[in-house]
Amino acid sequence: MPTNILMPALSPTMTEGKLAKWLKNEGDEVKAGDVIAEIETDKATMEVEAVDEGKLQKILVPAGTEAVKVNEPIAVILGEGEDPSAVAAPAPKPSAPPAAKPAPAATATPPQAAAAAPQPSPSAVSQAAPAAAPVARAPGERIFASPLARRLAAEGGIDLRGLNGSGPHGRIVKADIEAAKARGVAPRPAAGPAAAPAIAPAPALSAAAIAGTTPYHLVPATTMRKVIARRMVEAKQQVPHFYLSIDCEIDQLLKLRADLNAKAPEKGEGAFKLSVNDFVIRASALALRKVPAANAAYSEEGAVMFDAVDISVAVAIPGGLITPILRGADQKGLATISNEMRSLAGKAKEGKLKPEEFQGGTFSISNLGMFGIREFQAVINPPQGAILAVGAGEQRPVVKGGALGIATIMTCTLSVDHRVLDGAIGAEFLGAFKKLVEDPITMLL
Image (cartoon, rainbow, N blue to C red; front, side, top):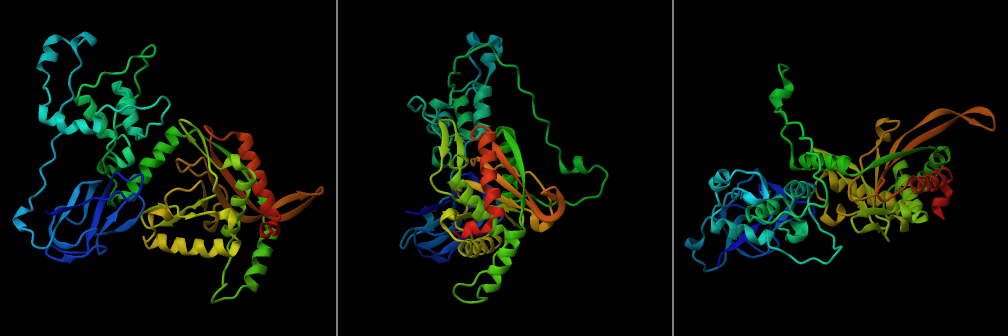
């Protein structure tokens, strides 16, 4: 029978993506492993491979289509000897059934209004039921749900513990909440006095309303930019940030870097060219090993203490930002870190990172020193517990031994999730980091 090609989930946070390009046309023969399309995800543009062989009989989602939901059919492959007439367009998705009105006994809604409320058809309810079917969960079991789903559930009085998630890895999403409302899931009992109504967010303005009479042109938001915008809002709204800054003298580091680069082979095996950022990555990794409490993330069940030190490094790419990961950075020398980081950054800018090369990480670094930025505060990359913002090294007046002198100073600011890390832990990490940076020879031991 015909085989549907489904929109793949190419990252844990992906719920939809843009079908950027088809690399095969209708009627083309495809084999398992052939690259057939390019998908623009929330992280990068990635290639999709066929898992079956046959003829690409029908393309259901044209190139350039945005907001294609994960697991939605995008094309149909016909096996050898199969009848093309068996290929039919997928059935149209049922529109979301109207929310059922609460029972008159539970609200002050007039009986006439309740009676006039449209009821969802049995077929629509049966189609929505699988995503919201009751599920038994152990007490204290973690519930995976999107921030929007949690807010809608709270507003509707729906207990997330009784829902199954239809998102990636069983994550409860908006559609599951809407389906639960349509099925008439009983609201959870109130635990206390009714909370004050939430302040409604300001309505989103159109581009024309924002520009007013000022001439403008619109650059459409990519999937990556939309996800960055959403995740940054979530991070600042839901993660209680606090910031700690420290000044590091890097004259010895610059001298050691110059000496090592001068002795390194320019080409061939063993070649490397160290940057200040390579020393920052190495120092951060070693500091996390010295202060393991800083290598943590918050969960509803408690602090997640990471056993590995995987450093995410922010890299600017066209249309957004991505954080390739140096796995086990505390176990790698400066030359290895330098070469791996250069390779990862190159792949990131070409959109060729594999999912395992940018998913995960236990700690992030964002360095704007090369742009001359003296000091800044970075936004935490959830679910990580901290991110280090690195500024430019510049000569500043310092007092040493009661005398005024000049030193090259680099200001670093740690953004911390106060739910999992306290000020003392952040300060201890920065102290260990500063000691390594100012005595860089210890990074080689």
